[in-house]
Image (cartoon, rainbow, N blue to C red):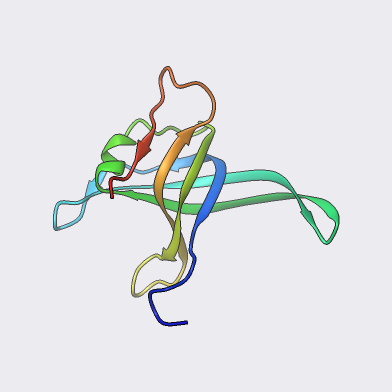
Length: 115
């Protein structure tokens, strides 16, 4: 498969455990980094198992600006893709394109990256 082609989409339900402060790159692009904890029941090899994981996630640009009200404990559905943290660090980070608040929207937010 040629470079640049291929599927890389992740949809994950979870709750933020840590939310960083909004920061800006040297070019002025807004970045919001956070950690998301996931808990579910999945079927593997015909057996049900409990799945727990926590991973780093980030929002970039307008999506980061819109999600400044993100708080630990909110139930969210995130859609995005996985990428290496940086050219020097190969650890995976979820780059979030959309966030859906799963419980109540009276004090929440919804954001979608403009393409």
